[in-house]
Length: 366
Image (cartoon, rainbow, N blue to C red; front, side, top):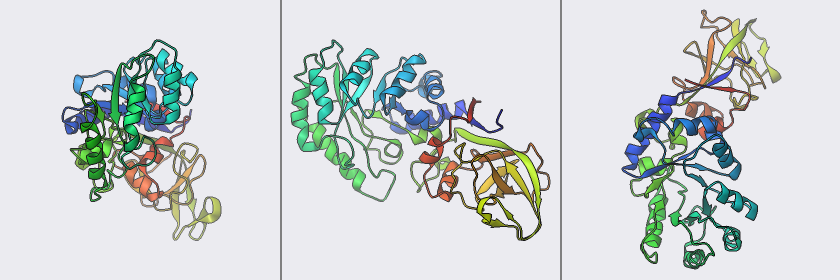
């Protein structure tokens, strides 16, 4: 059995949802659990957020693709599930109907499949409008024609809702978010008939832009205890880390001054050094490009990475930690060592680091 474990804190996850629900001020919460719940385990996260008190239960789940939704249904998750990328062909549309999935419609091809659909299921559709992201969604000038086509389907829709996605909500001094919201609200106010239910806010929208929420919000990274903006740390937002990536020291080495450690000899001992070898590497999801000096918690005390990250191991300079032994706990990130700090050291973002935790790492719920 490998010593590396991703410890997932159920109460931290629920507490984060409660915090986000308060920030959303009455909006319903669609928990984003795509990409294996950002590396935390999609079915376990969904089951955790389907239980507990009302404030810590998700109202719906959002995934990117059909296979993720089918995994949830197979695990007994009966809550509403939204396919954020919609369906990719007519066969997937039929599967979505079979499993009562809500679908995002953002492209002409998806409209055509709906028009050709001959089944009896009345879909609940999220119509996506592009207010400036320029990724998915119909442009505002297309919306009227798209709406008309959706009202003429063979099987009337169960409900038509409206959504958009924010491009720069994590940048608190940039006015693009306000412009996107204003554009979206103009479209909603000119909607023929009763204005539709809406969803705007991602994690940054919920926490930093009160006008950018809608009746449904879609928290992703913040659910897992990570700040969506470099301008604010997670603790100040009332968020707690959900994942701790922990392993153990499996060997201790004495390295004379002047000798090097690891591939490429990129780290050289300036003094006689004591090096701890930890069973964790890029095969587990530790970013390969972490530089020497990146902190690792050894029995709760920071010690610097020494040399390159290997597939299965890292080396840590514990010369100044004389009590380190084989079996000492090594934390790669978690409470005491924010994943945001590790991501910054690797030149990436916390999203990528968390999503990169490999399947061979056992998730333990605590």
